[in-house]
Length: 256
Ligand SMILES: Nc1ncnc2c1ncn2[C@@H]1O[C@H](COP(=O)(O)OP(=O)(O)O)[C@@H](O)[C@H]1O
Ligand SMILES: [Mg+2]
Image 1 (cartoon, rainbow, N blue to C red):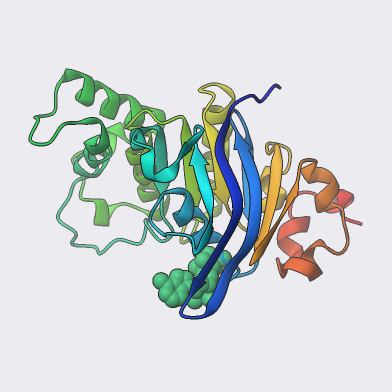
Image 2 (cartoon, rainbow, N blue to C red):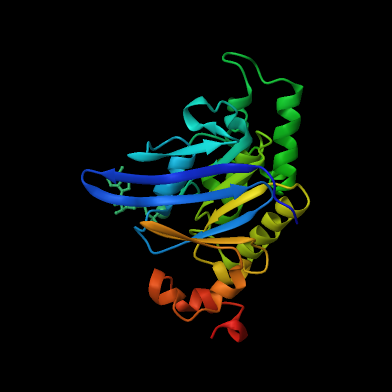
């Protein structure tokens, strides 16, 4: 596979909050067509890192370029789909249907006060069908199972027709079977729809065969372009605090 355009070009990024160093001197690039897994210990800065890529958190120093543009000048946010951490843990009585939630994903494509047009509705349906939740469209989001809610949140991110999908630990509260379906869907989005994927996760062993790059974040970032090698390194779990059983999951024979 060939990667050409860097979608994210992160240069010497550092971030402090109230004198606490959260991210330190991170430089890396994410290219079109990649499937990147981001791992690291809790509190290591993964969510903060993702938020800096989305312009939600301003770095203290360094810069982020998106499609070659300084982030302040980047306007095509509909190209970037984001599923935040804990997005699936919704209040049972939250007054929105699955369809309402996914329609919100089209907001970035629309002008202010414009009604949803046919294209919006088609994209919403397409995203929901892809995630197998179209049949759940009239149900309240809070009534759905963890796995169904997870797929609705991904459909919302897909509704804007993004080139990149950033997922921050979307598996919380989701059963094993739903997770398996979810990993298969991610693989399809990457290989069939050519969506670049940045996936913050602890379940690295399960997707080891799918990913093209592994980034470990614990204040600083370490990039590994041959993920399988990294996963077979005995220091990996010690260094980054990722529980060994997660690394070993499904890949027991490969762990040294
Ligand atoms: N808005 C904030 N204010 C204060 N501290 C924060 C804020 N956001 C993140 N942090 C701190 O930054 C560190 C990294 O957090 P986070 O990015 O959530 O890590 P991870 O996603 O890897 O678990 C933690 O110590 C957290 O307490
Ligand atoms: Mg986090």
